[in-house]
Length: 262
Image 1 (cartoon, one colour):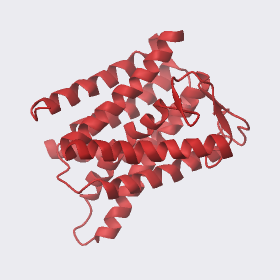
Image 2: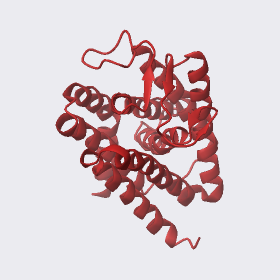
Image 3: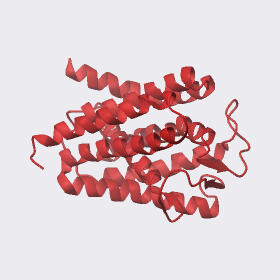
Image 4: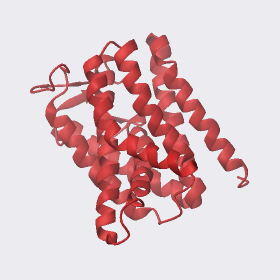
């Protein structure tokens, strides 16, 4: 692909990802199911397109192999052993499967892991100069993993309500959010730490600007999910949990990005 077309294509994919998610509250039935799958595909394609802009084909393959591969492994182990997320099963409504895991699921890990690592790297650049590389790496991985894991506070309530998967024993759970065990969120954080650490290590260091694609994807995920749960899905408690948790990293990131542009 000609280099000048890569930013245009990535921008189109980013816009498509946002638009398909905007349509979710208006859709029902089979149309909603197909749009859910298409939304994840567009979102992950936008993230992979951003990886390609920075690392070429190698960056794309590395991102998909690390984030998608580790996500698939975690889900395959999880559906068989109940670890680290708790015992759950997929309903077979999310399309083709590999190792009893819908293909769209490892793409979902990929779609937010890549922007989350870019968030972590950008925030780490704001640290004092005397901080060692090791300490900076810890900040990158910790903030990226928190961002990725906090997204599940929105994701699991939405997907279980839609019947795409179900937990065998959803107790104990967060107050006001039945159906999802607390251990699931701990499993998400652990898996996110592994994926983000591996992705940060695998992707070469580079100039992290511009931040348009990751900033758009992350800010929309945070704001759109908060608004959607608060207003359209009538899950204000979910909106509060996810909005606060994800905002802890996304807000400072947006402040840095927007401040840099000014």
